[in-house]
Image (cartoon, rainbow, N blue to C red; front, side, top):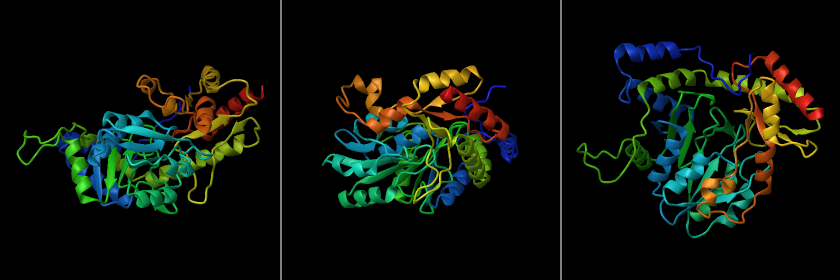
Length: 369
């Protein structure tokens, strides 16, 4: 049986809550599970407001709209991230300004201040793969230069920074509930904030900016609504988040034990001063001693029935942005290296220890052969 890169684990109250949606007829975005999920997710992350949306990319779009980011503005972000981050800024008419990554695979916060200009309106923090960005230096810069923080915590369900939940630091913080996340609704997302006005703006952007009189609109929004059935699934998943994080840490520690003596691969950092890895995915990077890249590694493992996925491709190398003439001549060596040599192993919650041994054996044979 093939070993897939990530699978959700659904065996708690998911069935019970979904049946309740169907039996009561509340399946649309008007159902009661929406508010319950918003409130309980926000409380879990230590925030005042939760705004459920259709996916994590929609959460970023709504956050950019709510902050009034637009034509002529700049938003500093990592080049090594998913394209949703830059796309939300680009769709608003603003310009992403890029920063290289560090050894944690997150943005190198030491490079941010040099990128700040009079046009900078926000910094988008993106927590990558299992460890958070080192946020205190970034928060200090935001305060110094009066900038807004968008905290993309899409991959950080249950992670903390110096003991405080990820998702509790941004003016607006966003999450994804895609199937490979620690909490899934199939598709879905959430925006968190403590600011009443920003919360209201996000709700407006989510729901076409309906005014006090329905069908009269002062500005353009989107339909970014989450359904009651998605929220029901998310609520059941949220109830088991701590168990999911514990399981992910077991997977990470087990892989590390099996791979740590291999001199040809770079493993994810397990601990920093501010957080322990929660291994949203378990990523490895081929060292230069390996004569092939991540594309070839994924192909070879795929032939053995092992599903893998290459690391993110950098924003400054995206064809869609090159066509715009953006980022010409920009190079970010750390991000360029891991984008070509990094990939992640199967790490779904349903993965067994026997399957991990099979994966690790295949990796060791591949790079030592």
